[in-house]
Amino acid sequence: MAKQIGLIKFKGTMEDLTFYTSEDGFMARKKGGVSAERIKNDPKFRLTRLNGQEFGIGGVAGDLFRSAWKTEIAKAADSRISSRITKTMIAILQTDTVSDYGYRKVENGNPSPLLGFDFNAKVSLDSVFEPGQTISVNRATGQAVITLPAYTPEKDIAAPDGSTHYNIFAAVAAINFASDVVVTNRQSTGNLVYDNTETAADTLTLTFTPNSPFPVFLVMGIEFMKIVNGKVYEQSKGQNALQIVAVDIPPAEEI
Image 1: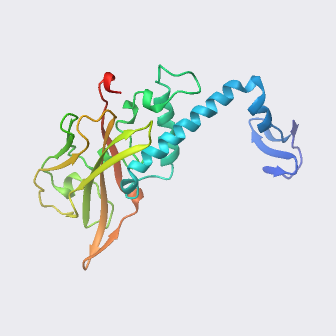
Image 2: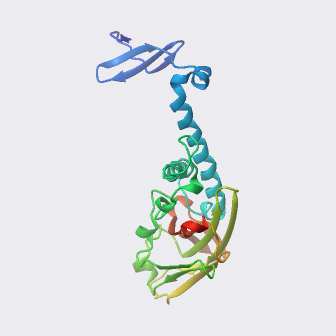
Image 3: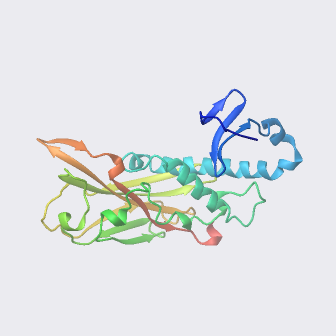
């Protein structure tokens, strides 16, 4: 390792040298690292390989989970949604008490960490829709109900500047992580006027397969738009919100 003492201070890579800053100032070191072949075969890197396997398992589960909400994510999500969901899936598979390390699975874990997950980390549902909502999930009848209280849009909803309308939407899905099977049902309030007139209490009722043996997830979101002369101009999805508001886990004997 060498320290730069010249007048020109580099950052980055030049041929086989990497220039960087540290608490000791501007430094330089030779590029290096462990080869992929060694990581793949060397017994010393067994734990590294097992970590990699579980990261891959979490990634696949994350892809499946995102596919369940493809329509909703198109309305509200941040640029790091994929990595954040994968991180959560890895946390879930780490609760698997049955499988060996490196082979743990999301379907054997506890999906509760997903409750309250905001698809847009910069805009939480709670910060936008202040009245809150009441959630009911009945696994026996296959029905999920979101009850919205009466509220005044301009007072109780934090809309982006220029918004004239908003839409509250929801979706429910029973997800079989083992077989990549997703069944999703959707509902919404439709475009409502963003003004100072009180909106009556309302419900969004969604259905799923009764007595499903798989975890059931319920998401709720709100999107904003500007409507001029009958044409809808959507706000950026980075200003909308989407959250997992319920995670219903089947009894242990059904899993």
